[in-house]
Length: 108
Image (tube, rainbow, N blue to C red):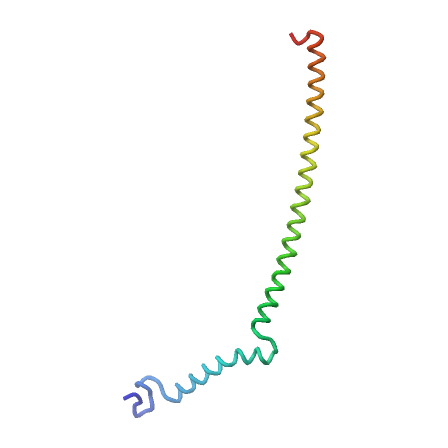
């Protein structure tokens, strides 16, 4: 039989215990949505708020990193321009010196 003479279902669990377990499970299932209704916030609103806060934190962090990268890039561009100017000055000096030396016959 399904229920024995001691009131156990399949001889394993008592009917009262089974009823208590089912009642607890039903309470837990219905409690989560009820908590959201009590606080006045639904799950979607909470998720949206968390997403918004996370987005703001990430945008600030990324904007700080982008600003640092821009500063570094500008400094590297300035250094590269200075190097090109120095190379031009060196080349012009070398060219003038070579032409002067070659014109005097020292280059032969």
